[in-house]
Length: 346
Picture (tube, rainbow, N blue to C red):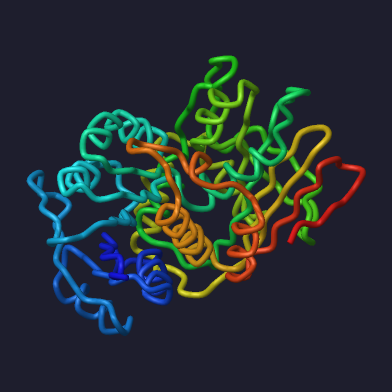
């Protein structure tokens, strides 16, 4: 059987190199790309079996290497040129972006992928991604209840430029509540939930993540997203900064000039209603995102998903196969169907 020829765009980045390594380990013929030839070559040398390529995503006439049948977009940008080039090449796409506007733009390319006979999977990562699957797991179609998603990240954890810009870009900005339409300032509404998996009571605040829009529409119940950090001080600083004009741009400039962490830290995602709760935890945000990407690629290879643009929960769920795959990557998942009964899943 011929190996799947997979292009990892942004494969020299913080998340992309983990994705490329996992795909090589699972039998993919991987091409690692970067806008810089030296970075692409260096990244490929560090992953035995991978080959380098220069892909300039600023080129509106982007062409992919020949015979690529799967593209993983790890750039985290809000441009659709990679998706459009993927459809032209009649290849499948997995996109890890966490920006609502970008996910909506990709959804607008549905007919292009249908015409190409290709499939695009969006929202693949920890949030959205694993958070989406957790929310689906607690959703009760017979007793419709609001769903709250909480995310906890560690500032010591490795992340790319796109991830930092994504977080800092929310500081000082507002978003429309998907249920009421009321404008809410990002990183306000601090609360201290009792978190599972030994995380205790940490601060979280309302933050604009795609699940609150996509799942509110798909499930027909209000979904809210809250995020915070393992460092309470960091959460408080960002919450305070969000009231200061242009603070987000200042924090982003500081983040760009500050050496990024290269280690790993714990993360937690929970989804809950009044009756049900589910959570997942692991170490290393980039590694967790790469694990979700590898699992999505495995599901896509064997599944019978029709051509078009699909969210991750249309491709996979927290079944035994997914749970086993997550456990293989050191990610623990618990699904408690009723909050007074604690049933730990595999």
